[in-house]
Amino acid sequence: MKNIEDPMVSLIIPVKNEGSNVRNTIESALQVKTAYPFEIIVVDDGSTDNCCEFISSYGTKQIKLINSKGIGAACARNLGVQHASGSYLIFCDAHLFFEDHWIEGLLDPLQKGIADAAAPGIANVSNPMTPGFGQSLNESLEVQWHLDKKELFPTAILPGGCLAVSKEVFTDIGGFDSELRVWGYEDVEISIKLWLFGYSCYVEPAVKILHVFRSIHPYTVSWDDFYFNMMRMAFSHFSEERIEKCRGLIKHCDPIIIESEVLKTNVLKQRELYFNRRKYDDSWFMNTFDIHF
Image (cartoon, rainbow, N blue to C red; front, side, top):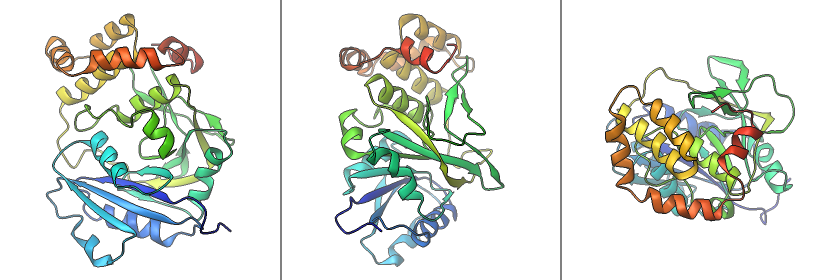
């Protein structure tokens, strides 16, 4: 058993129009067994369905509700961290179900110094026996799930649906990219950044959570915002050759306009800072994980 001197864990849950899912996620987190003291920080990013109104009925300081106005998935997670008191952060989607001692299992590789960030196996709630274990990228920068994993292993991409990292490491890398819009590539970007800055990302298959996978978002995600995020990630981390490849992936809107919008941000300054800071380059990353991009 853990004791009261063990580190506090902050579960950070960004929410937007989740309906009953957010209640189910919180109830699951509260009901499963763990010896760790933990808090739940819900960031309601401008929901219009009143899905977080019930939180005040708990009447406990263990659950904090933070309100924001459409700042997007990356910024909502960063905002949650600003209100977090935990030494460890676990970012969770608002449509998850947990198992007993999942926190212990997920934090174990971090505390042993094997990994700097970790994710569990994640299964569809409608198909719980076939989880995916972390992700890689294909030649179109689309995520591809690993299957049939049994032992702790390094992964290129940690899915943002459930991702654990120490607050110290999260702060050191600057968190999620706060200029990313709405949704898209935020978990890919932070995973690449962790690896390039010399940190490591692992999956612990012994831990499994269930995820409600949806066919559509409960809020609007435009192609413009999706491609903006891809190009900002590319300019932040990739070689000129790979930036050009990213331009070629833009199919549903004008790549010139998208790139112009990205370059209006601080991305070139960020690129310089990241290139000076990083331990490895993007070719090392692609070669290490056999990503053909």
